[in-house]
Length: 366
Image (cartoon, rainbow, N blue to C red; front, side, top):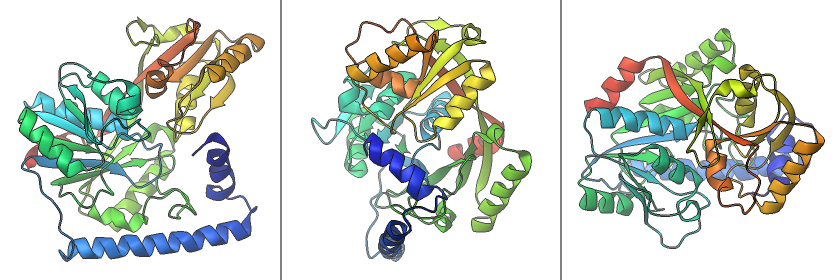
């Protein structure tokens, strides 16, 4: 989805705007048909009319119910690190969204070193490989075949599916769904009328809900989210988390910089995220003065022209820094520009504030 259609979709279709009523009605009809098709497929899998495939390794799925912005990648890192601390040999399987496919299945990291570039891996898979030094990372559309290769090649005992909630054809032992506290159930409609991947009632398939960004909303709103989740699925665990700002880094991630250096300074917030607001709120919480929001569609591949324009705006606005995210940084590294001196990358980590023992018990139980 390019920038024009991305902005149009969220501003005019997902939002409460009263414009384009006829278009919304047409999209609602398409969403209705999509939902029927999803229900038929789920029914066929539940009755074994379509067979789920099973890996020899146990499988933990981490996914979402909304399009982008839930914070699945940090949750994958959290769960994988928990497993590795318990001595598990872990492989992360990702689809590799928006990657340049040299082959259908590609090894991104062997648990020791990264073996391909960001274009071949996709930004999220590459970032996982960069941050998870002891985990094997594969990308491939067919998760079953990818999982078999991972198990045969690396003697994996636990597979973690990145963005796997809608990957129905593969059996999983635990299904974790990441819920964005800022927009837990989207606008209530399935894509293309809304930003739900499937009706939120499908959350009854989950074993665990990890609610992210809980500090971005009021306590009473968090309680409403938890009550609704329990109404849908009262047997699932609910884990509450927040993001913590750790430090700033240079574009290559080789140098850590004290986060206090942006306090009180004019900055441009540069991001291509499903939920840029939480990133921008984090910068404001640190004390940065955001003078411009440079927002691009999720997973956007930046060009030299983009960066040249942003640098020009920085000079016009007398901003000291351009601040971006780790996911953006791995895509920015490929841009041929000589001026990254003013760019800083915000490194964040997810922190569990409620339910850590329950999550550890769940993922170690199988």
